[in-house]
Image (tube, rainbow, N blue to C red; front, side):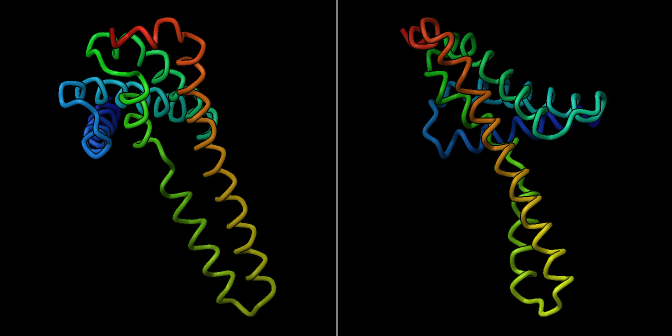
Length: 157
């Protein structure tokens, strides 16, 4: 239970940091933190306890952020998008992006054909996973906001 709490805490801290550079209203930082902790916590539980992959876990975590952003944004009188997108940023798969670039550099530096193919495979795999995770996060957070647009757009009034 402690690793999950730590995971949620650090996701919340990261969301506050991303919110501060994204011009989120100061009063809404705690809303960003709540959304990030909820989404990242759901993804962590789904991946760790239920064996979901990172792509499906990220989609469901982003859906949680998208659905929760509507009542949270109405409470803090801030647009749902301005609170949900900083909450998504801690879920970006940095290791997959790093491994993609690393494999690309190894491809370019290797003369051996078998090693080149190995690094090309790693480049493709990590790049596809990273791209799909980011796409699923975008879809997961925007679908609830658009489906509940009556509530989402009236949240700041």
